[in-house]
Image (cartoon, rainbow, N blue to C red; front, side, top):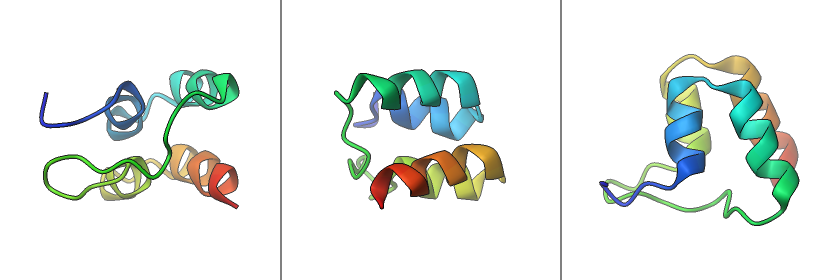
Amino acid sequence: EYGRTPLSWAAEGGHEAVVKLLLETGEVDVDSKDEDGWTPLSLAARGGHEAVARLLRQSIQ
């Protein structure tokens, strides 16, 4: 829905444990964009989910 991935939905909702689990699989695209151009990191930041944003930033570096 809206071109979002499970990682995007988890990031937007601030679900840190789910984001961590998805990242550990190595099968997610951290840079994926939804229909509006939002990435999981931008969704987490928009929602004020600092811990999730930190996890996503670390996975990009």
